[in-house]
Image (cartoon, rainbow, N blue to C red):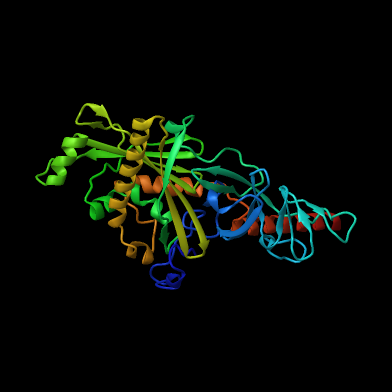
Length: 380
């Protein structure tokens, strides 16, 4: 069973409201391949090493003497000490317990009491990249592509603003649904959006859902100001990348006072969890970095407006939604919940990393079947 929320709820109502079984969505044991934000860049200084727990994996990250970052599984393959207790030597790290040394590829390069290291004395290494003032990690030695950048900002200089991580007592996939949940947006935020918005694959890794509606022509002051400032229509795009990153692109195709194109606001959400049952969603406001005093002021203004919009919506989101969440996907409404159903299908199609518990079980099962087949063949 999948405990989408607080593990304390896992055993409740199992006879009448059993939990769903999905391949990836809401599954703590399934970690999709993709980039994960690990820590702020400034946390790792030159020749320093630190350890982090992310997605059920203990990792060490260090910055070498040239300023490059590297990452390995945390535990020495000899006697299991966390390598973060050791020290950085050039591009390598040396374990404090017995002095074994490992390079940035995880290969053991020196054992003080042995002439040559064993070939099996290897630690899994991971690709790292610095983007948006964060160190990101990929659950493989090599990453097929860089950390996601919004398509409209690629090739441009970027500026960003970190916001306080959202801590939720639920699987990080659950909050990803909010922005495309027409019923929720109406019930909680009193905003009407079109649930049949455009849905497409922007590329092989990015699901893009375009949503919008007319701004109500009501009698409230906020409604009148919104129509006067933004016009009669608003729209936004939710994009989902690799099952672990989301992008909210707001103020889409809006003209201020019906004349000037409004700057679009982008918020990137990186999901992660450190302990089962508790997750973080890290929001990062991103925009184009412009040169010159007035242009810099405009850049900071866009980031500030993005942050204000985020805070307004966040304040309407009670934590109780996520602390008492028992999601079921079989009762989704075809008329209103098509974006949600599409997102779940997209997430369930994602390839899994070595960090996935069920992936390791599948590998073990395959190996056992192969050995069994080989044994039967030899017996014949």
